[in-house]
Length: 321
Ligand SMILES: [Zn+2]
Image (cartoon, rainbow, N blue to C red):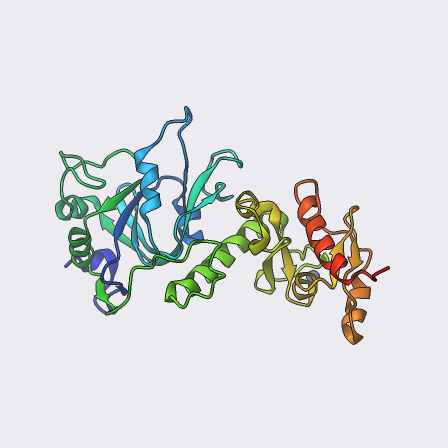
C-alpha cells in the first residue's frame, strides 16, 4: 500500500464503483491536462496531417459510457475519469487542443472521478509489457489513447490505494450517443451524458461569448446561464449538430431561454429581437421589454439557424390570408 501517494492514513480511501464490464483506457496528456481533465474532454482528429489513419487516435472510438480512463501526465497518472458519452463527431474543444477550429474529430465527454498521483514505476510493475501503453521494454509507447488490460488496471488502482467496487447488474453503457439522447433512455448514463454535455456546451459558449445572456445582454453569474440551441438539435443535420459553436448561444434563466425556445421571441435578419408567436398576459410584457435589442450571438455563422427558428415559429402563427 502506498499511503503517501493518494491518501493520508486518516482519510478514507478514495474509491468509486464501476460496472462489471467497464473497460479501462489510458490517455497520455501533456500540456492540455489542466484544461481537458476538469472540462471532461477527450478529443482526437479523424485523420493525421497527410490524411493518414492514426491507430492511437482511432482507439477513442471504442470508449463507452461507464468506462474508466487513466490520465497520464509524465511522470505519473494524475487523474481518473469515467466516460459519460459515446464517441461523437466534433470539432476540437476550445481549450486544451491546438488543432484548427474546423478540424474533424471525435469527442468523448468524461466525468472526473479523482485526482491521484500514481508513479510510473508502479504502472510499469502492474501493466503487462507489449500491451496498451507499454512497449515490450516496459516503456511508454508514443501516442495518445490506448486500451488497458482490465485486471491489470484494477490491480494497479488497488495498489495505489483506491477502493474499486463493482455495482452488480450495471451494464456498460452502449446506447447514449452524445447529442442523441432524446429518445428517453432510462439508462443511468443518459443522465450523466445530459449533464456532462450541457456543461461542455455551456463552457464552450461562455468562453466564446462571455458571461452575458445572448438575448437580453445582461451579465449574470455562470450558474444562471445555460447553453441554448438556436435550432433544436433534433432538427439539425449531422453537420449542423457538430457546429456547436454557432448553433448554440448563452441564454439566461430569467426568461430568455424559455421565451426563445418556445418561440415567443425570434430574431430578425438584422439581428434584432422581434416578437414571435402571440404572447399572453404578462409574457407579452416581458417580450416587449426585449423587443429591438440586438442579439449578441447573431452573426454570419449563426444567421441560418436564426432564420430557421424565426420561420419555424412565425409561420406556424402567422395570420392566414
Ligand atoms: Zn437574458
